[in-house]
Length: 212
Image (cartoon, rainbow, N blue to C red; front, side):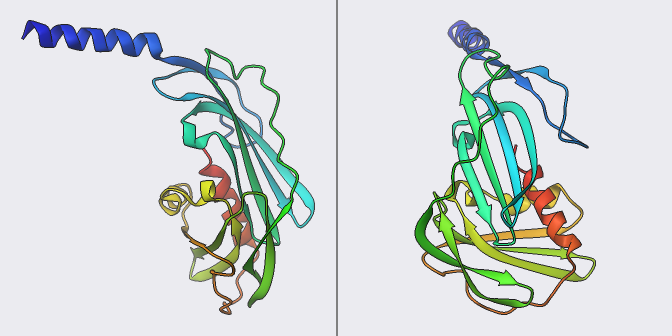
């Protein structure tokens, strides 16, 4: 019994010694936020920049700071043709090391030879060249007030990994479902019904909300 108690106490001390303190900064209603200090029992500190594009024009940048696990460190992206989102999370492993980190920049887009189907209005027969680490095709479905929006394009494995549809669903009042597949043009050229443009903004907001 005494040995068990000793082991528990040693484990507690080990936890406290190895806990990392990081700056946390998560925007809620704007792209700016106030930094606070948080204790991270596992993982690293991260500075994440989310950049959204409409066509070739940058739409917005959002910078966040928080604890990050290893799989969240690096770059993830999704490209629907008419809109693209690039998430770049720079990590470090010492106390408060994400204080003065320079904001990570999205990588230069270089086609990788793979194509996926994308939608333009009701027509989803067009193809989109994937870039960098985008090795999956994606289909995103948003349901709001009886309206359905389907978007298709390219995505990285890091974006597709995990139950993202559940996370996104919890961040908005709409039902959002993401499905990824591996292989050239694997996301089908099926025609979809046309929906309202405001749902495009809703989808982009939901994807950004799930980043951390």
